[in-house]
Length: 234
Image (cartoon, rainbow, N blue to C red):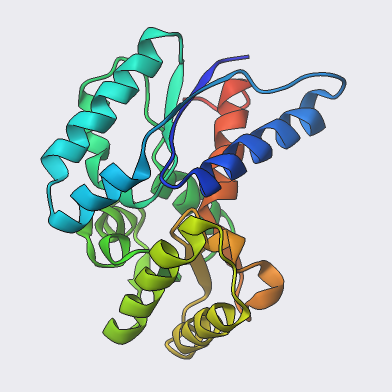
């Protein structure tokens, strides 16, 4: 079994989900007392969030690259950045490592294409919904057509993520708002919904959506386990 490095803490709520999902998946695959070989570096999200919103991606990149190099140094065979938004720094981090960084959008796109879905609705932070680093990768590398909520909905979802979900607060009224966003994307002919923030899966489950949902946390974590067990090629 390979060792997975988790670059987490953004937020720890979703990093906790990564740990749970990976260990539950290992239990299913191997049984008995098996558990996931992993190393977690959990940053102080308050520092990262402040850099995100001030636009200081260079400093944020240095913090995450230093952490990623530490994970590599202590034995990680591969790395997961346990957040969609910070894949903004994917190329920078990968360029400083000798181990592969498994891109969350790649894991998700491959699953969607396998299910014949090509027109997708993307929900996430404003950084993820607006930035070319994520949407552009889905479009150029995988040929997906990516739809996003309107600007006011993007702002509301961004608020829900940072002021509620990252703090572990799950509100029914926020679920209703996100369900409205999904319905609007369905009316724009979306075939499926990417939960493109690792916390949104805490709020929205498949039962809450009229469209198939693709929880990036679940997909990313399970893909990493398959890689660790050499079920897929890295």
